[in-house]
Image (tube, rainbow, N blue to C red; front, top):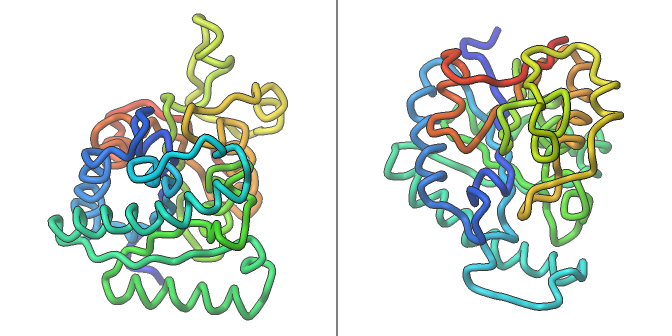
Length: 254
């Protein structure tokens, strides 16, 4: 039996950039501090987007709309993103390791076993796995999702007790809050289908997901008995404060 609760925390590009053109070092600091603060009670597996945004600081190309250019930017930015994670996490006494995965890995039994064994070993050694899509060979999350589905599959494979999706709103609303001023937050959802059907196909300026992809990810883990929290990642200490019931968020229960 696991001594600690296991959380898969997915942070998207909008959270990491704070809706600016570049990765926010302050937000990386915030995430590292939370992992440090929570490590006695929780095992955290981090699913992180942001490679393409990280590349913008070093390389700008007007042909970025082309898939091959996005893949090249991801290859450039992944190195800088992980360097930033490493430098910041080291200062917070958080040890990290990088895992690059594709959807095909989750469909192959031997690859599944290898992923599970690697994650379990890293956690046992006190390392925080940082997972991202291998954008050089796969394009699913570049096109859509911003690693939401990848986080859901990781949560299932790693036997997580909770999936937390950080976004740029205080959870799920009954209407799109970016369009309707009278939109109200929803604290708890069990039936996801109506919310998925009414979701507008909107996304942040940096990310490729949006609320619909998060709800679809939540549906994947809900079927496996794993709850999802959708939390506003722009709040300082968003995960710690959500766990302490100090900020609003949406629970997608099982």
